[in-house]
Every structure is written in structure tokens, then in C-alpha cells.
Image (tube, rainbow, N blue to C red; front, side, top):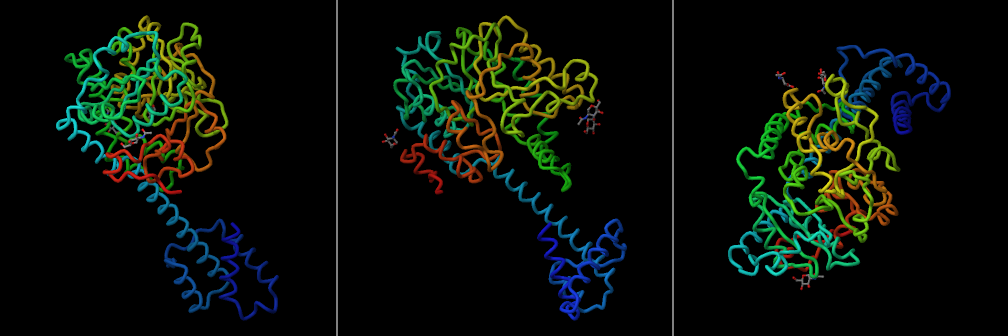
Length: 470
Ligand SMILES: *[C@@H]1O[C@H](CO)[C@@H](O)[C@H](O)[C@H]1NC(C)=O
Ligand SMILES: *[C@@H]1O[C@H](CO)[C@@H](O)[C@H](O)[C@H]1NC(C)=O
Ligand SMILES: *[C@@H]1O[C@H](CO)[C@@H](O)[C@H](O)[C@H]1NC(C)=O
């Protein structure tokens, strides 16, 4: 506003400078009166709007406009500039979005080189964990963590930060699940970079017999998501307009983002079947960093509930922490309106403690499948995309809220994340677009992640993955 006002006064000076010295105040008053008068008036359709500031000055200097024509031209020019500014912000955000979903060259290189090593180096192929430690994989006296990821560097940060923060690292067992394509590389990495005394197993989705059974429900769900993705991806730009608010815009972008439709994102709904002998696991997303010992999560009394999660409907960050069912579902749809409460508090994925024994007594997975199919039948009008909405439905009544200090969400959405709460949280979650491994990561938040990357590792170095300079 201040800027606009100085602009107006400057223009005014340029056009009417002959009389400026004699009666400034009267002129300013006249201009205000005129601007007020034309405020509700549309510019004449045939008005030629200057395309730049220079054009505008040139035009007004070379024409003898009266006050009203001047004011109308000024208004039209400013409106045009404003529109252009908004659309250039939009394209900036679009570029940022593509930077966020494209795989950075360094990470791609890492995956390729580690895949090569898997075939050329026996060490990279050695059994994980060694045969004598295999019994621990199903021993419930250990702390079992599950991580699903196709990003090797991100997975290494999750595992390394967990083990480093642990009071008893020798009690930790990590189960890393990846896709078939990434399996050799992920295996090589953890075979060559073990984190003694913790135990790590790496599995590809193709190695779970339960998952690969023909017409297994997971394949069905993936197929459904695949259809969804091809529907939404590609045409989401057409539905994005300059008038969108940043939130609407962000939601539209996320709907088209492949990370929201990956097989690995659905894997957690099958945990009880994937780990039939385990009774409790902590499931971590690959965009988290663990900063405290997590073993006391296993001591929390879940009171018969299945899913220990942080609620997201109250808390400091008013954008990230104001999520209720109405934020995820279409309550104009009768199927949603009759079954759910728009004010019900949502909770987060990212760090959850799951009681698999309690889970096995429920119909959570069937409910999940049922509603994913309903959404498909309703042509995606129940909710847009993503794995959280069907999760919110399926776990309804099975969630035990845990203290928010366990899991701080919202890193990577905005510049002004509170650093002191980042320092204090047990787990920090970069669930925004600006992932710490991307160039667009927020610089002041990156060190919490980069301090767990070994930049002198030969593969990291050879792929030119470098510590970001502040
Ligand atoms: C589903 O939605 C798309 C666009 O949103 C529309 O073109 C199509 O006709 C709809 N299909 C049905 C069966 O309603
Ligand atoms: C929400 O549901 C109503 C009723 O089925 C439908 O007309 C509308 O298009 C849906 N909205 C979205 C965004 O899908
Ligand atoms: C980092 O990588 C280098 C080279 O591979 C290795 O010698 C070193 O022990 C690693 N450092 C840590 C802390 O793991």
C-alpha cells in the first residue's frame, strides 16, 4: 500500500509537475478524490493499458490527460501489473513444485552406483542381518522400527539418527521396505554401511509372499491409485489458476504429485500381515529425523488402541496443526456427511506406534479397502488423493493420542518454523514440499538433517552430493 501510494505520487509529480510547487496539498487531495471516485468504475474497454512502467510514463507525458483519464489509466495499469505479479508467483511455485517431485541427480546417481556394486561386490550382497542374528527379526523383546522408502540417503538418515539417539542401540531392529527397483541399491548401502550394534534388514515388496499373492488386496489398491494418478497427473495444471489461494494451490499440486500415490505409502496398512510375529512396531516416514531415544514409546499404554499418533487439530503452527476431518473429506457428499463428523480431530502419519496384536483383532484393513473402493466408485469425490484420508477412516476409534513433543510436523512448509521447538522434538518431520535433500530445502532447517549424512562416504562423494553451504 505504501509502495502503491508513493508510486501514485511519483506519477502525479511527473504529469502535473508544472504546478506541484504551488499547491501540493490541494493536488494530493484532488487525486485522492478522483481515485476514490473511479474506484468502483471499470476502465473503458477500449482503454489501452500500458505494459510497463516506462510505457505508462511515456504515455502520460505525451498525452494531455485530464485528472480523471490519468487516474483511470493508473488504476488499469496497476491492476494489470498486479495480475502479472500473481501469475509470475504462480509459475515460481510451479517450478518449485517440479523441483520438489523430480529426483535430484545426486540421489539418482547414488541409486545407480549402489545397484552396480550389488552385482560386482559380494560384500554388498552379504545377508542382512547375518544368519546368526535372524531370530532377532521376530523377537519381541527388541525395539522394532519399520521404514518404507525408495530414497537411500533419506533412509540412511532415518536409521542413523535413530541409532545415534538410542540409549540402547543394541536393542534396535530396523525393517526397511523398498520397491523392487531400489532393492539392490538399498541392500548394498546398508551392507556396506552397517550401524552396529543395531540390526538392519532390507526387503523389497516383491519378497513378501503375502503381498505378491495373485490379486492380493494391496495390488488392487495400487491399481486403484494408479488409475487415480493418471487421472489427476497431467491435467492438474489446467485446473490451477492464478486466483487460487496458496492453500488451494498447494492442495492441487499435492493431488498431482507421484509421491502421494506410491506403493510404499500404502504399505503400512498391511503391517500385521507383513510382520506376523511382531506385536508392536514404530513406523517412520523417510522424511523424519530422530533426535531422542524412542524406546519409551513402547511403554505408552495405548489402552487397547492400535495406533499411537500425534493429533493435528491443535497446536502452535496454525496451518499444519488445524486439521480436522472437514479438511480432508468432501462433506457435501452424503456418504461422508452421514458417516463422519467434520469436527473430528485428525492425526498424523510419520511416526506412529502400532500395536499389531490389537490391530489383528480389528477390521481396519477391510475398512480401508472398502472406502478406497467407495472413493473410486464415487469418481474421487469423497476425498482427493493420498493415503491419510482412508487411514483416518480405517483407524477411527483405534487411535490413542500421544504427546505432541514426540513428533513435530510441518517442517518444509514455511520459512518461520520455530527452531527451539525443532530442537526439543523427539522426531522432526519434513512433511512439507521443501525436503531437506532438495535445493529448495529451507537452509536453517537443513542442518538437523545433514548432520546425519556422511559426506565423506565414497558413494556420496562420487555422486557429488555435497553438504549445503549456509
Ligand atoms: C468423473 O469425473 C470426471 C471429471 O471430474 C468426469 O469427466 C466424468 O464424467 C466423471 N465420471 C462419472 C462416472 O461420473
Ligand atoms: C462433493 O460431493 C458432491 C456430492 O456428491 C459433489 O457434487 C461435488 O462435486 C464433490 N466435490 C468435490 C470437490 O469432489
Ligand atoms: C564416513 O565414511 C567414511 C568413508 O566411507 C568412513 O571411513 C567413515 O568411518 C564414515 N564416518 C562415519 C561417522 O560413519
